[in-house]
Length: 114
Length: 112
Image 1 (cartoon, chains in turn blue, brown):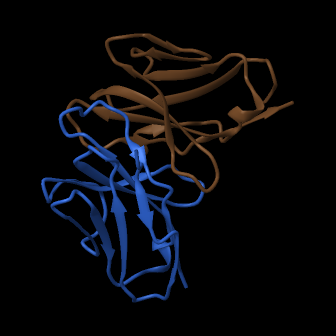
Image 2 (tube, chains in turn blue, yellow; image 1 turned 90 degrees about the vertical axis):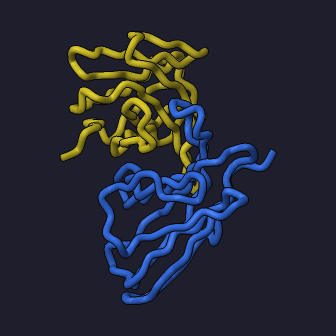
């Protein structure tokens, strides 16, 4: 049973560039959430996707956007990268009908913006 | 304004002793609480949870206590093992809320 997979593992970009991160949820899950974890901090909620729509959004600017595909996989796009966007980006999957269930996380994508 | 706080960045405990990790929250709308454990180069993994209608939940060596009036929860690990060395995150969620709000984590080191 495949867990949550994320790609790429590491990424180096320069300021002003754009980046796309990818996530495949755990088998059987239909909801994908994205989190940003800066060094020394806990994961911060970016947004959640269900039925190919953004259902909830955290306090992140419009430079952060996403997409969910019919197979439940998801992408996180960040435009006009800033140095402060350097962080570990975590994807988490869950089942919409079980909102109090635990999240299953991928290993994350480490983004460095130079 | 950080709604979930873990005030101890680190904790060191001897193998076999009890580890107690603490978490405070400010949002009274939170009604479900979870603890996650994170090893380096891995994503967080679920450890244990508790609903606001309970004050204690136990799973093997792990017990979570919730004090709603104090808006405080704690994770007890007994006995602690070297393999428990990791970063522990406290997370909270409101009713039917998609997002989980995390604390900044406590790094637990269990010494042999």
